[in-house]
Amino acid sequence: MIDLNVKIANIQLKNPILTASGTFGSGREYSNLVDLNRLGGIIVKGVSHVPWPGNKPPRIAETHSGMLNSIGLQNPGAKAFIKEDLPFLKQYDTKVIVNLCGHTIDEYVAVAKDFDGVSGVDFFELNISCPNIDKGGMAFGTDVKLVEQVVSAVKSCTKIPLIVKLSPNVTDIASIAQAAESGGADALSLINTLIGMKVDIYSRKPVLANTIGGLSGPAIKPVALRMVYQVAKRVSIPIIGMGGIMTGEDAIEFIMAGAAAVAVGTANFVNPTATMDILKGIEDFMKFQKVSSLQEIRGII
Image 1 (tube, rainbow, N blue to C red):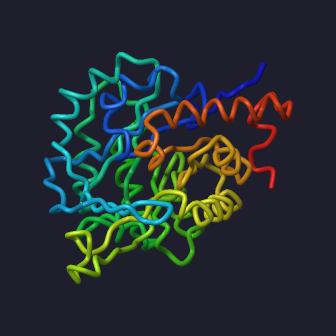
Image 2: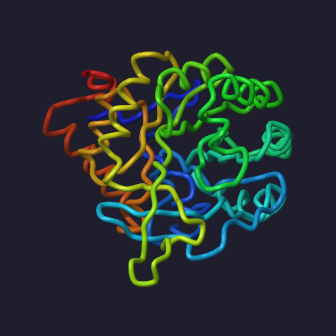
């Protein structure tokens, strides 16, 4: 028997496999391919207080060992999510994590308050790290004082446990993590995408309409793993590791580096059943290595 249970903010997840925001829709899109009941949790696509149109296309480009995206957090807003997507998610035995986005502190607070009295949400994931919007977003995630301010503001207006998603586009990720913890974060998720670009040499223009975008996939895994390791040494709250996780072995690396759970992102585009394959990979490793609980190997390095 192996124990895959994970506890974050005193809430128990049946296993450490989550879906990274923006790569799994709101679960409906994958429900015919993946048994959503088997996931530890679903982190839904970013939700804002009011609808956001997103960036102009082209918004996605393939790269070596990864992809660039510049979606711009397009979404229909909190009211539409609560009415149309949340009832669907509540049918399943999995934790629901709503990714919150905003341009200003007031907007982050407003979208958190949209969920007052709404059942079915287990966590918020505060997105202060997206590189694809013109204002706010990553600016919050790269300034220690702003990180603490925005986390504190959202934490003070909701009782829902708060996960803070960190940007890798900083000099000292551990200091940013500590600021989020000081602001009241219950957990952290990292990393979001690295800033990158691609050029079409024949049209002599950037491939993305927004010129730059977020790089994800296996190309960023070594950076993500290093940052999770560094942050785990400096904070006492749980960490959700992400960035290029494609296999069970990748997930085990993040757990050994200190992650409580992992989020699968770009792999979902390549292999729609990646979450299930990664879960099986973790189980196989634990059986083969005679590891009865993830706690035995968490943060072992």
